[in-house]
Length: 535
Image (tube, rainbow, N blue to C red; front, side):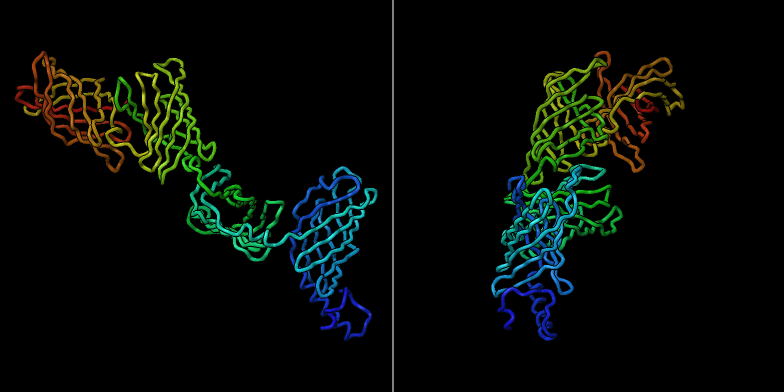
């Protein structure tokens, strides 16, 4: 077409005949359509009152919009957005030219009389897809302000951030902070749509699937940013999947980046930040503890119920933590530790202090150490206090303790005796103490009190060993039915203490234990019934 070779051509109507006018409109339309689009530019501002450095070079977008057979434009600036509604496009066979003398910008300067709307002009060109433009703002008493635009080569925008991201994520909402999720390593996928736009998809087993389309990539120096609205498909507590509005904010600079996904409508506002690399401290952060066993020079495997999750691990960096252990028995520990990961196993080692009281006295502060291994049911926290009781170690476990620990303790109640062979009630005694001690998993020993029957003969106290224990479905525990044969020493003489034992400890701690005893050379069996509640 000959018209394409002509110089600067007006997009507005001309005073030629209808045929020429139609041809001009068609040619003009093609020019406007060809230049319409998004241009990411480096921009700076100049005026008579301040240096260019004051408004340092920034990344700004220029959007040229073709509609209704004309071209309009939005030019981002340091002080607002310039709007042009009727841009004239020319073409000389190589370069498109852009002009408009009737643009405007609304400038807001809080507290200043200089706020208002100002006339702006445009002069620009596009060669080989690259935009160079100058906008001038007549700012009244502040003189003329000039804004320059230089299109950034598109290869340095979208393509720079294309790839996969996301080894782990940290989520924060109204109900929690920095909830750790190990992601796939490629949970976030950024794909190129055009030279300046990308699609962003984040697939997480925990947080659902986020989707963002045609996300504009901006550059400021060596930093690239994205900001967009989209959706997430997320499962609720019931498992039903719902769709929510979501946003993404990202910043990329070299090997460093941040990507934050936000869902305002979920849990008071949920933010999920995605990172590459490892963060073992966040992986182990949480609450631990079901029971503890303590060992010192004076005792072994002293059991304490820690079901209130008494160990709290808090991440202080990606590889360091603070560990707090608060126990009604062992006091309060505060440890600073380092975390290491090896496969699915994490270790913590550190030092700190323990505040511990003794026999009701005021708490004293002691040096303390921690070594911990965290891996599912194999998790243990070992707190050591070298200066207490010849060296005390308290090991906190995170599994259900064996039933032998759960029934161990001192029980106080009433013992009654019955001699079946004689049909004789042999009396009873109140405020008697029976002690159950852990021996090994599933096995306890039972120390029974002495008993004097008919105010005549006394059976001595004894410890019955090898008593089996198991848990019942109703929350109670069953002892025995076990045979036993012990040898005890009374007045320097060995006596046989043999028989059977069976009993139940209810979920509320009350107990009933029956033990049939053949003592020494006695020809008859005495049946003892112990009824009590745990202390």
